[in-house]
Image (cartoon, rainbow, N blue to C red; front, side, top):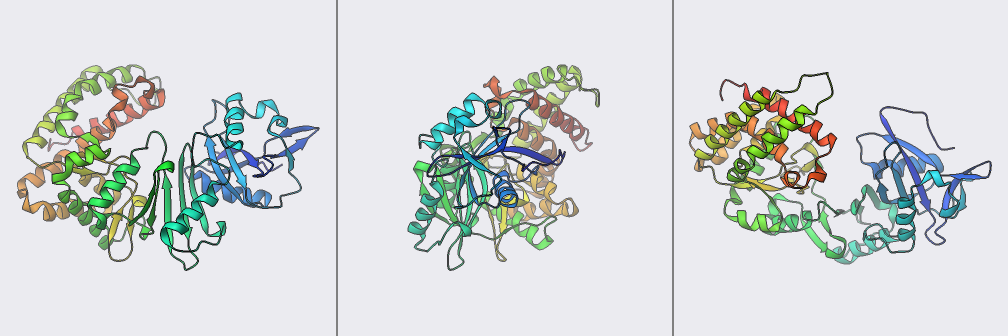
Length: 438
């Protein structure tokens, strides 16, 4: 029936396979009752890509994922996909959405899918036939020919987000990305950075505001794990050089959507974060590890405040932060490194990024300090670089918790999962705060 046994390393998805012309849904029949087909894909992977592969392997059909719905508690997530194959497996039967067993879909899912079928979805990249429009747009702005969906690789989908890799007939590759809430700003910050510092980002080809989407040229492969030392050093040097170039454009970056993580802002919200952590620790129910006591959290707040003051006293100019630096967001084409995925871009003390690089390759953790010392030598003394290097392991965890800062005013974002995550980061800060160098 297209289902597999439980596997803790996989995630089950309900799949709504839609015929684009009739809007019929492919279902599995059992005693006159119609069920949604289901697939399992590996956890912690790109769902759209893995769903496409699983659908093809299970039923022999090509499909384009339009949307992925987060499941209600206790249910598997649901993916709606447009069929691209004229024929489908004989084990599936075409029915209307209303014929699907009531327990298979929530009323909200049925309503949203019906709007999608009728072309009334509020998500511009979740429309029937959108992939054809995307291919046509890529052809029009690049002047190249794209023969069909066999040269389109889908990596992400759902919630107004999409990520496609398109290959033209002459083997030129492009990336099409669209973002939805809460990352609508990624288009403006990416556009801003591409205009100001084009040598540090993949070449921006075109923007489609109605989709909140943009098209870039392929810029190489993501860094391997662990990265080659020469490439790793190049990445650090490139990013540090980018930061120096942004020193005079902080206000422009903030206006484009970068988040404010400058030291005065962090210090202003420190007491609120400490109060939140005290409350979160009091709510801990797990006995696997002891919660930090109120006295220790208050003490941790004092250490953080002192560290912020010390870092501010070094008079390091504010610059661009990426805040999602991982090997997948750094691309290398053999000669240069560029940086992608700017949804968490911020402005703040540039040395906070030094700690991110150190964590990317612990086998070469001395290199970030050395390279930053070389690049920033024009602005800072050796002693200032050393002191910043000692302070950022603690402060980078704090800025990671602070993030966009929106959760401090929007209580709907403070879920039990977020509180658990915050407790974990607090323990990391507690360990970092015990460094004698502080």
